[in-house]
Length: 253
Image (cartoon, rainbow, N blue to C red; front, side, top):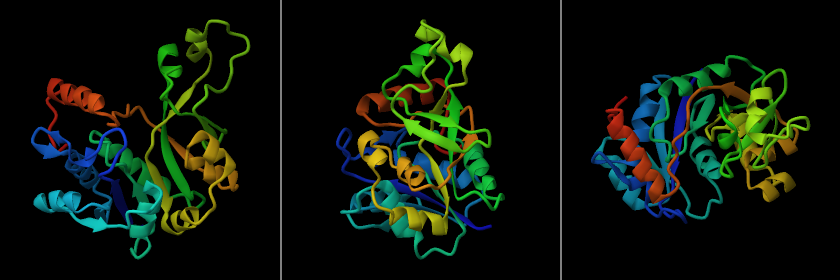
């Protein structure tokens, strides 16, 4: 089973322009993501999908491979599908370029899920540990069925605990789950998803994965304890740098 990891890296971010090139210990953030994908040691190739020559030039300096994509593609999924279309692989992992501390072990777990022929798409989830975390407005929650397939993704807090008035105690009574925004697909299914029309649930929640569910396709979830430290703002970058320094982390895991 051949797999590739494609890292979408867009220069024009509304909240953090030039984010993939943000410097961490002297290296661009996109290199941190790239090195962790390489360390998974399951990919035929690791590629950066971008629409900007500055990112291509930065990737060239560390010996990576970047592929230019049209600038008018509406999402990272479309950018990944554009690159994947002509690749001779079975599985594609879409790893966001703002996940510089992603665990290579998690990428391997996502790859292995596809040893089950029934799996079309997979994504990681983690247990919510506290009421404070559960009610974080930036959290995307997910509920799953008994097979581990996602029932729904939402920015709301679900399920609602009718019998517990103290919301800080909700995680004591139920295993609430947080979604981690990394996606893995069978290649043919990825291309199908990219051509599906935008769904009503996707439009209102602004969550692309709801397109898959609303069109009737399953998404297998993979449980992890990986606590995503994605970088959305310059303030996030400061927190990340402090964490890296405190834990003596380096660009190569």
